[in-house]
Image 1 (tube, rainbow, N blue to C red):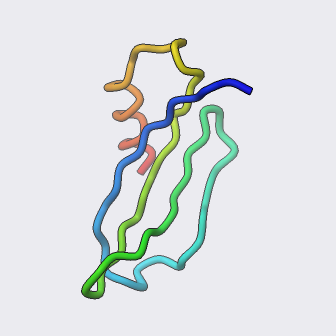
Image 2: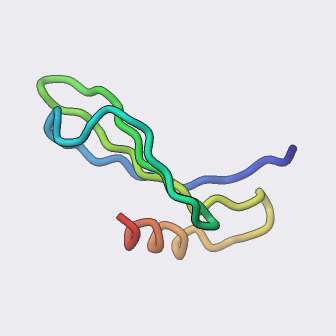
Length: 71
């Protein structure tokens, strides 16, 4: 086992916009989308990925940018 760092962003959406599920791709590094319940008719879609072994990269801004392009 090894520690990994992941990158994620959350976006507020109207409830029932997307089904309550976990989605991911098979790219390397991979990406995922999951839903988190919110309040007052809203949920949060959490998008993450661009993982790497801790200590092997120092490019967080670039990884967040790739994640945003993937979204």
